[in-house]
Image (cartoon, rainbow, N blue to C red; front, top):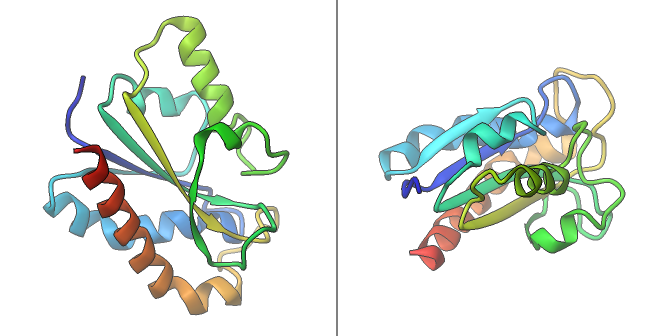
Length: 158
């Protein structure tokens, strides 16, 4: 098992709000790496995730979510058991629950613990270079909340 905690920011730079976790990751990467985390910023998901999370002690995944249960920009802890139950979580082709199923079926070593941090968004399908105004205005606050949750989740695991 790789004992260095992995923080994985996933999203898609092409789609308006789906890039928010990537932007947060760009801001936090140097800070978190300085604190001993391995940080990856991925503009893809699905099967490529396996290479990053395979055999990890702890993988914390930060992604945009569309639940309509929270205000846009809200940073939430996502229960991994709920991920597969939602019809829309992310515009990526293979979602996290499907990726984990493939790992189990192929006998690929699972992370001991997976934590998910979601950033509530509304528009993940419009192609745009910019995030929505709602997210742009809250980007610093979102970044701070994600950092706080990463620290909390990694502390709980230790």
